[in-house]
Length: 163
Image (cartoon, rainbow, N blue to C red; front, side, top):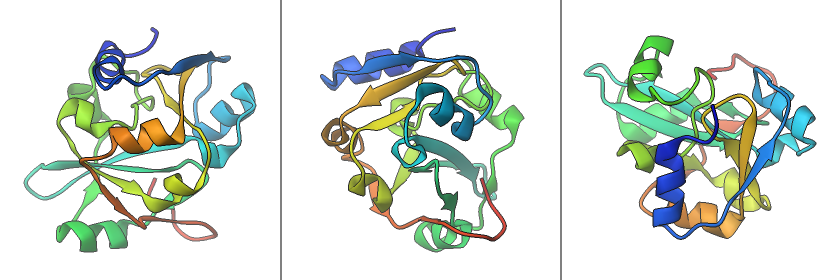
């Protein structure tokens, strides 16, 4: 598999130039960073959650941080849980499990992105498979998120991870 056709179309429709970074097959964001020799905080990752009536929201956070589920619940005023692999396979059928690009608007999904992502340089993210990352400028990433809410939704340090 290569870059998701939906993401390719979405980026082209928004006139965003991107670079595809090919790397050895990996299973996690940490492995992506090592394989592509990219700082972990420069990788944006998607965490998909759902509420009690199956409304989905994509949280986009730096791969070096953890999702603050409590904060996200306060922002959405909903009780949330992580979407299951089955849920994700249905919604993101052209993407491999665990390789969802963090561009919820491409799927018409409500997206909330972490304010930490505006404090780093260029950003990298899954292309829809486990062998390619997409590289975009920070300015282009922010433009792609223009209709999405930006909030402080992540944390560092010990504690139970919700990602």
